[in-house]
Image 1: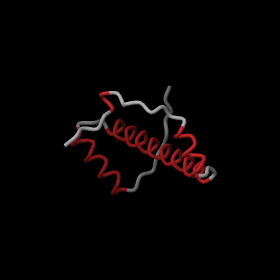
Image 2: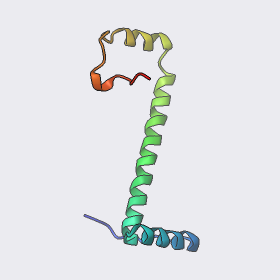
Image 3: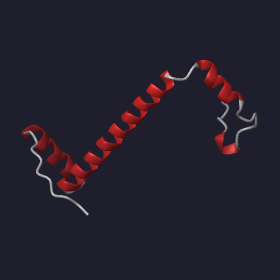
Length: 85
């Protein structure tokens, strides 16, 4: 399902978007959709990071270290190991 939305865009941004869409071989509508999706993902990530920051303010360092102490002391999987230089 999709919705039709009227969007007012300043002339300069409209010209720029039209040029970028042409350079990418996109229809303008597809460029706008991609930009909106990317913007939404960025805002969702920002909100999640803000939530984590607020959560971290309510947890003490001792509580975090106690939680880490519960993690098993095992070797990482081969694909998770850092390459040595």
